[in-house]
Picture 1 (cartoon, rainbow, N blue to C red):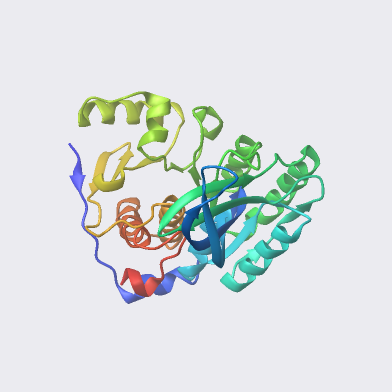
Picture 2 (cartoon, rainbow, N blue to C red; picture 1 turned 90 degrees about the vertical axis):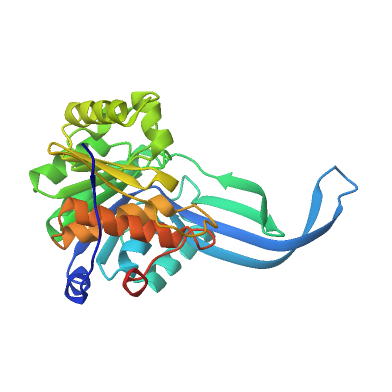
Length: 317
C-alpha cells in the first residue's frame, strides 16, 4: 500500500544545507535563448522571420544540476567536459557566478554542448543542438579526477543526458561505493544495467516505461518498479510523475507525494532541480521520504519559471 507523505521544514534543517558537500558529474551544456518578435514570412522559404531582441544564456545539463544544488547553499563541485571555445568559457563564467566550484576539463577535439532555442511570442520555434562525444583521453582523465575528488564530498550526483560524458558510469558508481558515498543517478536510455549499485535512481514516467514497459495499474507499477530496484541493487527508485507527483520505491514499500498545485510554464530542467534538491537534503541527513517531499516542492516551483532555473531555500520556505 502506498503511503502519502506530507512535508514540514524548519530553519535549522535548511541551515544544514550549507554544510553539505556535493559532487556533480555528467553532461555539461550551455542553454542559449534568442528572444524576438515575428511578423512576416521569409521570402526565401515558408518560415517566420524572427527579429532577435534579447539573448539569454544559462547552465544546462549537469551544470544546471550543480547550479541548483549551489542555490540551496550546498558546497558544490562540478566535474565534466567542455570544448576549448567561447561557449566553454561562458560555462565557466556562469559557474563562477553561481558559486559552483568548477573542475571542468577542456577538450580541444570537441565543441561545448550547446542547445540554442529561438523563441518568439512566447513560443519556441526551433532548437539547434551542437554536440560531439568527448574523446577517450578526456574521459580517462575525468575518471582519475573523479577518484581524487570522492573523499572530499558527501553525495555524488551522476547526471546522464546521453552525450557521452558518463561512459564510465559503472566504474564511477563502484568507486563511490568503495568510499561509502551516496550516489544519485538521473538516468538516460534503456540500458539501466550500467547504473547497478547506485543508491537512488530518479527516472521520469517515459524513461521508466522504456525499461519496464507500460503498467496497467498502481499495483502493476509497484511490481515492475520493485523488480527493477532489486535487480539493480538500488536502495531506492524515485519515479517523477509530473502532474501525478512522485512515488518512492524502497525495500519497505512505496511512498507518494502529490504534485504541487500551480501553473506550469516550462518543464525544462525540472528533473535537474528535483535530483539536486533530493541530494542536498540527503546529504544533510534527511530521511528519503522527507527529502522526496522537499524535491517535489522544488520541482513544483521551478516549472513556473522560464527555461532552466533554480529554487532557493527561501522559496522552499
